[in-house]
Picture: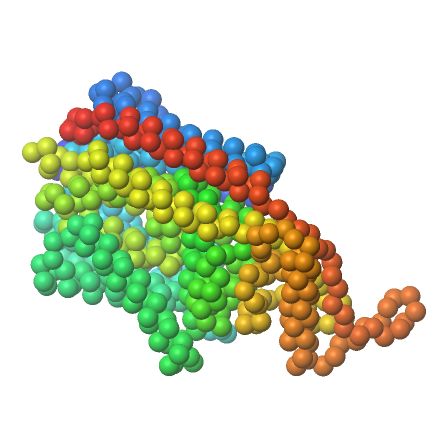
Length: 436
Length: 165
């Protein structure tokens, strides 16, 4: 521990501050939020944005000319992106909407934080292993919380109140869910545990206690049995990781892309197989609902394929009065509720029922619609660095793979920060390796 | 690298342009809203998706109202007339489908207590011309392209090796 603290003290200023910010973000409970005109502002996001702003304020002078140029251009791009979207809504006469304006402000602040987190880590990171350690330590806290949840949550009133939504009723069966207080959502809790587990596995000197933590992290991953897709995803990820290790496959963006594509096809094939051959074995409603929603998302996006800003695609649903992928939507509905869901998104019915509009249930679609064509340019850029051979390449790409798989058919909150951090670490390491 | 960037932008923009042009090629929508009175509501779209013909989409609204949207690209009276018939026919089919298996619900009018049989009501019918909106979309689309080209040109001036320390 002392050694770690020594390492921490030697870190450059912005990285030290980012690690503190990351921990602060983790420890602020996800449930703390305020709602203004139905737009949810989370305290952790506000904390993180203010933190990033302060770091930028003190770091800007330290940037060299090229870094300053990249900082200014990329920030101008997101400002212009939001301006362009506001212009569109102004021109079609739909700008006078508090929910839309506040969502835009919220989204801009979030995207600003993510972009500048990416830039700061990309510019200044010199200790990737420390970031991995920090991610692993958050996993230790999750394990401690899990033990408290299992053994003490019924004994104390405070804990009963904290974990009051840990039972989930579905088809008259009761499932226990572990939603970490720090994270707030059970699927994100499982994913965070998976990422912590991977970050911990690369530790050089492991103690017995580490193996116990690994074991408990695996328990957390599989604990939320209600989320069957989550369990399937975890099994898929473990199998792929085992195969990668066994066949000594070297990862890069192309391999990662192929694996994600394989996952996509395998899930669709399994879904169709179950529907046509074993229709009573498993209820596919929720899954097909998400598939249909994602087709509808792409359909809506193709009606105006530009950078829309963070999670702003939802404002275009109401514009989509006739999907071009209608036949595909019908085909993938598979007697589920998907068509009904997206049919209600074409009017304000969905918002009136749920007091919110749903978003893409796929992290790649979220970032595609957020960045537009920049998404592909970025991938092109990322590909160059993922081909380099740097020290933590394999584990960072595996973490990225896990995040993508877990959020391929799910909308996962609170994972963007981790997602962007990992991407930035890969690019930073890749660039440093290229320079050498 | 520089050439690759612009090649990629060109290919993707042609693809995106193709998609946006497909999405906007039928600029008119005949939108007819229906609701049921004294019968089984015709919302919950999933149950009758097999009835919905080509060029037609259904949007569920409040109070059991459904909006049947039919798209077309030429604003001719005979086409509009045909589309109106198409919408009405679909609404009738849905109405029959939803009320087929159920015992006929009957309700009485409040004033004179006369029993009323299930009815399908046309609540609203509008012809939407998306021409202007489509022009706005193309305008925004090309403005975005200009931004990308300008930004990429600026980004290419950056010396990559100086970005990380």
